[in-house]
Length: 173
Image 1: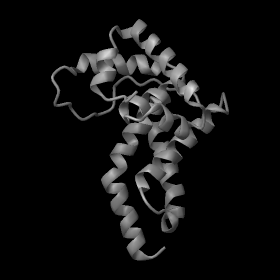
Image 2: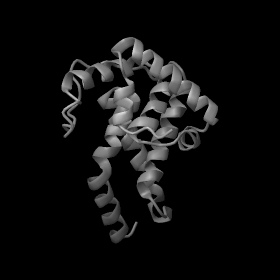
Image 3: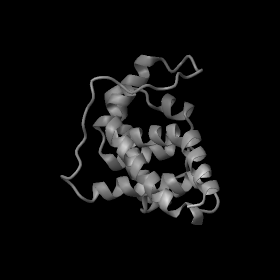
């Protein structure tokens, strides 16, 4: 790869790497698995970097989601690992998001099946529409809607009012 492309890729990783890691962590629930997922996605993107046109971050995110979805299709090969301490996260400027609430939601998210968690990450963390979420996950919009509904019902059962949380983080309908 040419030095200019390599420098461009390095700058992309330095600038967007933490965002990609945060998304991967939300998908996996495990910092190590998230790092592995991002590392694999970046390795694939590096090999194709000269041919990536447009939004490179969207391209890498799609690799992350596809690789994670592939792991769902191979049950038993990947299992969730619960950690004693939550990862370092940026502090919200919104006072209504206190640490206790965020930790409760995080713990509840880890109890959800991987596909439901992915739907919630895409819909509410990334603020994607049902159609965009379906396109990323390679399923129908009805599947996204039903998975989101089931996941939110389970979260309500575990932590109470998640409607306030989902509305404050986005989640276009």
